[in-house]
Image (cartoon, rainbow, N blue to C red; front, side, top):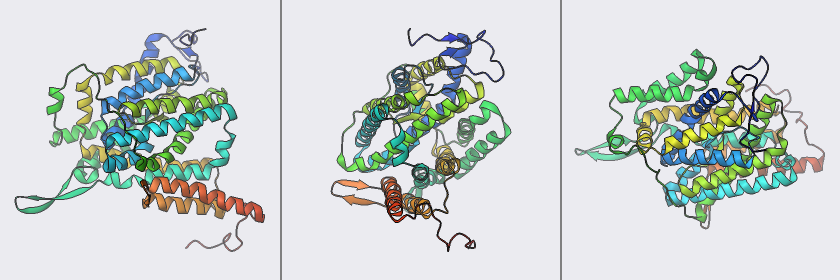
Length: 449
């Protein structure tokens, strides 16, 4: 049986109450195409925000997200619905690596990250996922996700340089909220209001809606330059960049593998819970597929990929989990990526809009780490959990830096090592001493300062 064969769900038009369209089913093709295009809209805002914040070409990133989605569907044999968009975990390492060694070196880091993730996928396929839970229990996973989001906070605020203009020293801000605070505030308010005013799919697309509203305001304020849009061709290949491999930047990227593992495993579990099917057997394939997609992206100038929560929201709202819709989404994204004019239009999104959206998104990434703690009932009355999160978060937020020869390790890398190291060190000693899981007597009823 071909993997491109889907069973028709019912009459192809309606879904009975409590029912879902399974991954191997589809609705009528007009409805399937509409839902597939809706998936493109869902991933659009976040997928484009990563290249805009890191300096990568938006059209190239969209091109490789489409190619990566196709690879994911093929490798998982159409069993797991997912769109692979830009991962926010790459923003900090790409920015740091590009600033110190150039974008081609940053892309080399993306390729290495993808290769390591693919290797993890092979191990999971052969040995199962139990070892992931042992190495990265919820307190560690939540901490790593949180410190990545909070480490990015300075990028949302933006940086300024002093320049001499007409004999006077002035600050020139080209990125973040500082570049255009009014536009940034409008963008943030738009995201907030759309989230609470609308239900269903529109409420879930609040980031995209906020960016569009902020863009309109920025255009009215004269902050958008359309010169390059007018000069760009309607059809053409995106800009490709060849990666180079610089050992000094690899330490920035290795921790991202752990985040991608957590995101992919979480995606598999989410789809399983929503469809009532067991996808444990495809977890290794999903990790391997995302690794392959990330290698492909880094090899040509795109950002690393991950399974997208935004598209989980679309599936939850429509109750359609058909992988056929994702083939449509990939084809739509590919077609858009082959229009240089469209890519240049995306590149005109100004700093104020990006800074506003980044403020929300980076904060959400940080709080998602706390959500992992809550969902898994992590107790911070246990000093092992408390120390693990406390130390790693400060290392990540303050962006501690350590150089070892040609290698430089910054906050995300060092925070990740701290989270894993502190947890397993304390847990191992506590087990030997027989004190694991105990709460110190002098802290159980301590008053809140």
